[in-house]
Structure formats: C-alpha cells, structure tokens
Image 1 (cartoon, chains in turn purple, cyan):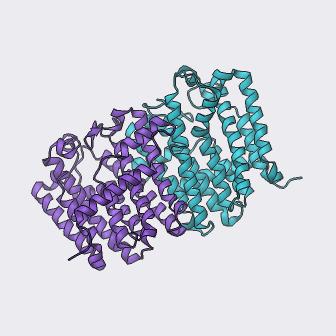
Image 2 (image 1 turned 180 degrees about the vertical axis):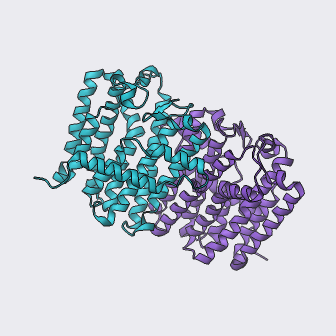
Image 3 (image 1 turned 90 degrees about the vertical axis):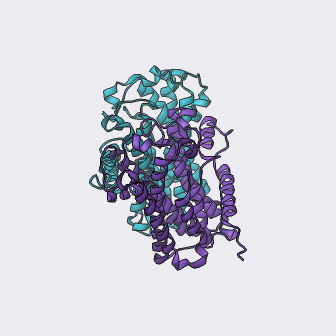
Length: 306
Length: 306
C-alpha cells in the first residue's frame, strides 16, 4: 500500500496551500491604494481550479521541491503562474475583449468594480507575478540565482506575444474564420498551452536544475495536456450549462469562434482528448512512479466536468 | 577642454541607440501574430523623448556600464524601462481610462488599431520588458545572476501596485477631489517617480553592484527629478498648446484633476521646479564630475518645452 496521500486529498492540500500563499503574496486590502488592492484580492482569491499551481506542485515534488528547503520556491512558482492566469482572465472578460459578466460564478472585475480598475488589476497582477518569483532568494537562499533568472525568463516568454498574449491575438483575429485543425492547435498552444507548460517547468526548476532530456519530456507532457485541456473546454462549452461551468456556456458557438467540436464534431473531440491523455502518460514514462501526480493531473484535465 | 561629447550630441546618440535596440528586441512585424507585433512596434518605435533610457544610460556611464562588456546590459535596462513606460501610455489612453486620441502626435493605439489590440499590446510589452532584462546573460555574461535578479525585482516593484499601477489607481480615485500637496506628491511619486527611479537604478546596476549610500544618493536624485518632471508637466499642460506637446493640452484642468498649478499657482510651480532641480544636483555631489550626464538630465527635465 502507498503511504502517499490519495490524489483528491493531495489536490485539496495544494489548493489550500495556494490560497494561503496567494493571500500572503497579495498586498493587504488595507494598504493604499486600497481599492486596487481589494480588487486584486477579489480577482485572485476564493476560486478557480488552480490547475496551474497543481501542475507546479506536482512537478516540484518530482524534482525535489517537496523538500522543506524548496517549499517556498515551489509556492512562489505556483502563485506566479496563477497570477498571470488570473490577470489574463480579467482582461479577457473586459467589454473590448469577450465582454463577460460572470467568472467562477462571481461578477467579473469590471462589473464588480469598473473597467479602469479591471485594467489596472490585470497590469498590477502581471508585475506581481514577476515580483513573487524574483523574491525567492529574498526569503530563503533555496534557488541559485542563475536558475531563478531562467525561471523569470521562461515566465516572461510564456506570458508574452510568443505565448499567451500572442494566442489571444490570434484568437481575436480568427473570429468568424474557418481555421484548420493545425491553425486551431497552434492558437491554443500559445493561448493556453504556453502557461500550462511553464507551470510544469517552473515547478520543476524550483526543485532543481533540469537537463535537456528532462525538459523535452516535460514539454511533451505539457503539449498533450495543453491540447487536451482545450479540447475538453470546447466539449464542455458545447454540452454543459453555465451554472456548472461558473461562466457563460455556449459563448464560442454564439461568437462563431472555431472550436474542436465545430471542426471535428463532439464524439471525435472526446476521443482526441482521451488519446492526448494517453500521450501525456507516455511522455512521463522516463520518470517512473515518481511522476504519479502529473499523471493524475492529466486524468483530471480530461475527465473534469467543469 | 573636455573630450566628452556635448550633452545634445550625447542625448541624440543615446536616443538613436535606444531606437535601434528597441527595434531589435521587439518581435519582427512579420512574425505571427503579425497584427499584434506591428501594433507593438507602432507603440514603441519612432517617438518619445526617451527620458527613462537617457536616465539609464547616464547612470550606466557613472557606474561603469559604458565599458564595452556592459553595453548590452545598459541597453537592455534602458529598453525594459521604456517598454513599461510605453505599455502604461497605451493602457492610459484607452477609453476606460483617459480616453485620448493623440499621443506623441500620432493616433493612439486603440484608435490606430482597436481596443482589444491596445489591451494586448500593453500586456505583451510588459512581459517583453521582463524578458529583455532576463536575457542579459543569454547574450553575454556581463552581469552576475544575483545582480540580474535584483534588477528584475526592482523593475517588478516599480511597475506594480506599490509603484506605477498604484499611482494610476490613486490618480483615478482622486478625480474631482481636492488633494493636499502631500497627497499629490505621493501620487506622482508612485505614478511617475517609481519608474524614473528604477531607470536610474537599473542603469547603475547594469554597470556594477551599488552600495546602500550610492543607492540612497540615487534615490534622492530620482525623487527630485520625479517631482520636477510632474511639476513641469502640469505647467506645460496649463500653458503649452497640443501641437507642441504632441498630446491634448489642458486635459487635466478639463477633467478637474488636481495639479501643482491648480494647488500652488503657476509661478510658485515654476519656482518649485527650479528648487527641485537644485536638489537633484545636490544629491549627486558625492559622485563629482562623473555624474555630469545625470545633472544635465535634471536640467533638461526642468527646462523642457514639451
């Protein structure tokens, strides 16, 4: 029998740790400018599946980050990727982008506050993500500075125009167009895949240096779960209701956005997600039993209902 | 007779170098997503006084960054602060913030492109600023990684909610209020001062490590020029025309925003700017003749006409 906690308990533990760490890294709501800081906390705390922090922690455990001396670095990696993700949702929901009123079952930031505040919340959260990562050494000398610079560089690349922002730009440009499967895949590899990939890499690097073979294996895993994540999102958008999703369902079809379901159909999309889940498992083979949490997260991403 | 080039020639040289370096660090307009990259280049290239890069270069020369081995690090520091500044202008000009159509004599980004693109341009430029700084070591081993982490941390702090974004939030909240001189000063120290200060510090750190006394002296200089910059901005907003400024003049008064001119009056504001110029000079006394460029920049900031 395994002495490791079962997956569900592990996941809840990481989610609770992440909530606590985010609360600690975010400026206090009483610190000036109070309205901005309150809005930042409203944005980041109290919700979300924390998929990116879960990936960072799973990779962190695989590469030694579960040791006490690396725990702070893993927590910072997890919070940095979650802050980038949270800021991207705030800007994405704004009227000039997707114009969405509901996110994680709560009013979006520009609805709960105002548009100018939503803009600044996103901008400040992006800066804070880099600050949290740049402060690893300030609290504990657990990561060599050269490795820390590598982490900061990877985060900047994943967040920028060759990563997440670039994917969003392609997404904007493709509304009403009929994309090929390859074009759709490329868009999602930037829009969602880049940040999922860097979540895994930062978690690993918080533990120790990784070599080229290890980085390749993690990249193959990330590519598979990144695509699976999007395929499942499209399936859920086409089949689940808004209450279950905590956001407006059916928006993509209504906006005439190309999706896996619109290109492949529903059942072939489900089959593709399952195939990608198996690819993710295969990519982890070199790491053996130790990669258990990353395997379980691939299963979660494909089998989730929201 | 001095063998150093005179100030005007030096300034033009730095501006030309900065334009070249920005063009090199920005993704090519032909690289996908092409529209986003074209908009990023439209935003950053071909305009601006480049005050922050000038400060970075002046501090870089003072702390050894003019040596060939440090030139790349100084150029990256200069471009990183300029990219943060440029992104903040793009977001500031959007309809939900200042709603401005004209910037540096050109249509603002949301006018020339669209609002969604302006939002993404700003987001991607912020990420690129950190990427450019994180890549110092990738091209040349001229900065120790621990010093590079310190630079990244300082940039994140200056750009975030305890710096530039925080100042913008206070600015938003203060429209229509009558601020005291202290409150106005605090707002500007965050909104403009934090990025001017970090421009000086990053330029210095691109050259070599700086000690606490040196950092204090540079901070005192930066505080003085940061305030002077804003006092002169308010004077120009009240007295110059839009064509000279390259942006809409008289907006602050029209928006009922508190300014130095509205609180102190015009002539006392001019006297304050001159007093701050002298404070900036005094702060540089420990560095002697070597700090010549920083002194000249203080003069420029106070004596500029646009």
